[in-house]
Length: 318
Image 1: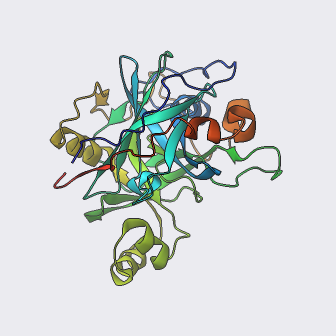
Image 2: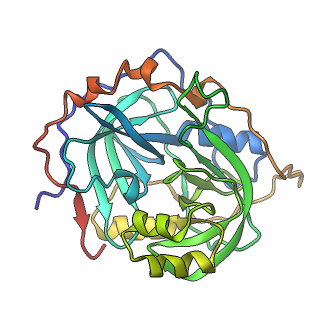
């Protein structure tokens, strides 16, 4: 089987005139909510499924590597798993409002994880990946693109959500990769979104919400409902897959992209003052998307998709 899903898309992203949001310095120093949001805003991806009929659905992701003119994002497998439907492609919307056709999709078998590749000539800066041991009580932030999230319901199709919370539990045994539970508010469409520590580094990939029942979990992960119910009964919180799992599986699959991997825990600033606590973010222009205005219609990109594309890669044993 071919290693990649080849969509044979145009190499040029559809974009509007916009500047990339300011990117705060990402180091191990604990930062206030607005600075972490600035980092998140620049690195959170909106992943949309498109067909001849337009946009079919959406998920979220993180920009985690840039190798020359190729960008790599991480999301959930269930966001990009089209099954046998080869007339569906994907686009990624970045923070500068550019919309990039996804050229390759890599789905892992044992965890609800996937990588997406797209051409990017812009000066994007990926999010660092933090690999230290996570603990209950640790503060975290979550970023993603909920479906039907516009306050007025008409002007915008999607509005990025950024919420604060804390880690509630770390499971001894992961369930399809899910191991980190947290209290942050989440909604449908935020699957694949960022879980960030208080220094603004990615620590987990969000994928399961507290509002989902066993049936939804079973359908999403392709497991039987009794297995999903057992997991749902144990948790009751939102769940993500730790970055350490992502890096291990990527390495096993031979993906040696230039990830920025860090090992330090968040550190207090030199003056010892840390302003954390709940943070309520008001989305700005770069966090508001109307796909009709950006793309005219999704068919402009779908016309470039090769209907005879190969199957999505599934890495057996990854």
